[in-house]
Amino acid sequence: MGNSINKLRDSEQRKALNEWVKQGYVGSIIAGTGFGKSRCGVLALGKLIRDHIWKYNEHGDKIVHATVLVLVPTTHLKDQFKGEFIKWGYEDVLDDIEFMCYQSAHKLKNNHYDIILCDEIHLGLSNEYRKFFIKNTYDKLLCMTATLPEEEEYRHLLGMLAPTAYTITLDECVSLGIVAPYTIYCKPVSLTDTEREEYKAINNQFVYYKYQLGDFNAFDEAKRLMASKNANPADKKAAAGFYKAIRERKKIIDFAENKIGEFQELVGHNTRKKILAFSGANDFTDKLAASVYPLAVSYHSKKTKKIKETALEMFRNDEINILCSTKALNQGLDVPNANMGIICGITSKSLSMIQRIGRLIRFQKGKIGEIYILYVENSQEEKWLKTATKSLNNVNWLT
Image 1 (tube, rainbow, N blue to C red):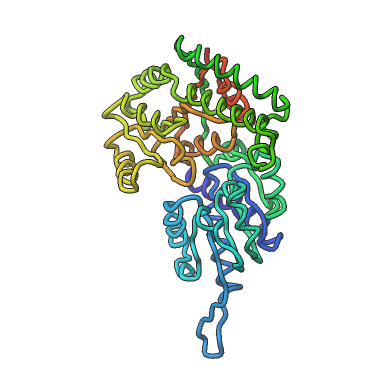
Image 2: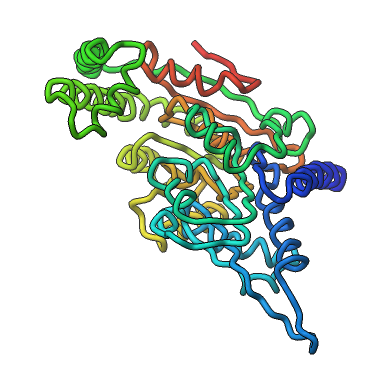
């Protein structure tokens, strides 16, 4: 079973690599988490360096006059990518590659690169980080992400930088057996009376400012006004109030008190399972972990590198069976022994949902990923959830 799955995955990865070759090593691989995008990137970049970057003089000495850059979201992924080159037999090319995070790369200008490999390219398309692609030049650009950006602006930019070379959805990966099957259960949670009144008041503010800004294009108009130096003060105040209402409304949802009780109940019924839990805010992630202490620990951006490494080791070594995170586990980290997920905070973005599901469905024989999503009913979170799951199969809405 394992060998046949590996052969199938290898076959699909070869298809992706061949498409990169056809496009002259410029383009994007859009593939569901668990497909093996990082391996594709390593194999393509390793071959390019050996075949096209390395030159030799008449004495057989290697001469390298080229620049190769790998862009990743986090420092952890820099180390992980280096390990991938070693794993797949390309350790010898590491000295010729510069690894950098998007946060640092956007400050660079007037540099030329022969080859750039971008992991999680959707993160490099934001207004801030895209400056890197404007201020620097390159010959070959290889990009990878789990799904096309939902924002039309980002999708258009990616199409210009690196047109799609190969694409396969998460559910297509499941149907081929490349990753484990999964089932999603969407479980409604009610607000407390106090929370409900607060949410109603803030939502009224949101609607008020939304109509002031033009209703259907309120988000675009608010963005334009906040960036404008010459905007009418009253209009700018409306835009600021609009954004404030969004933040405060989401905070009530993210910290909904009853999510804690539902989380505890789910954990109580599944004490022998390895669980990844996600929330919408770091402070709430800590609350989740504390609510089922000593079964769980927190893992998020406010934790030190040492604390996060210790948390992962404890989880992998079965010293704890619940790892609670905010966004830190969304990208890149492989947690193969997790078999259940509890998501307590979401956005409308399908990409975020797919990344979180992907942490749970790396292939293991006989494994099925079981995901529970706790959402506040009759709120914006319910609308977000319906948007984020509309492209996924095996979604069950509980009463």
